[in-house]
Amino acid sequence: MAIKEFHITKSSGEQVKFSINKLKRSLQHSGASEEMIQEIVQRVQDELYPGISTREIHNRAFALLKKKKSVYASKYKLKKAIYELGPTGFPFERFISGILHYSGYETRVGEMLEGTCVSHEIDVVAFKNGTLNVIECKFHSEDGLKCNVKVPLYVKSRYTDVKVPLNSQKDKPFKNTEGWVVTNTRFTKDALEYGKCAGLYLLSWDYPQGDGLKERIDRLRLYPITVSTLLSSREKAFLLERDIVLCRQLEKNDFLLDHLGVSNGRKQRILKEMKSLCNP
Image (tube, rainbow, N blue to C red; front, side, top):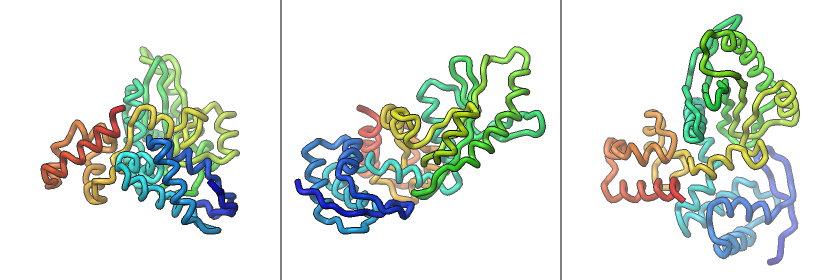
């Protein structure tokens, strides 16, 4: 396969050399066969031109995957689907809570904690193995935006304020506390350096390496409902307003599709899509 040598435009505006291997890796995460991936890569490559945006490349690959099998397309659009949880960021907090819940944590969203100086509303509080995790979520609703050093600086100050009152509680059910920063994009270099130095646990789209948000979602099969290629934008908004953020939740609360007036035939197709995403 001849590889075209030219630059493409990332969402940040940066010009980078086109990498056929990156395109292949992104398609492999969808679960498509190697034969299907090769066919799609060839089709996409034939349509490339200098300066094409990464978004346009992904849109073309997504359209080709959708023709092959919708569940592959759903998994392929995961990153974009998380942006669609916005714009408030509250569904993202519910989403993170859901991922942790299915990882064995006891979780609460929007918990008020008393600090030494003031009270704080914490995005997610998660308990597991004797540690109470105080988690702040930084949600971005568009690609190309990174979580800069101001975010862990701010989170560290809030965590420090609540840490002493938490640890001074009598008969507390936890031995340790830990502060987290979670984002759906990436951390800047300074944000990573400060966060690690300050003792915060950092979780982003691709950090920690091999155990970032993307890997956890794929491993646990905890996809947001926004990955669906069958649900309309209106239907997704309706479900998000009712705190249904995971495909797994919709599978268990399928009566909500009746409230939306979804026909029985279409309902069965949607539930089949949910089952394919949730189960190996």
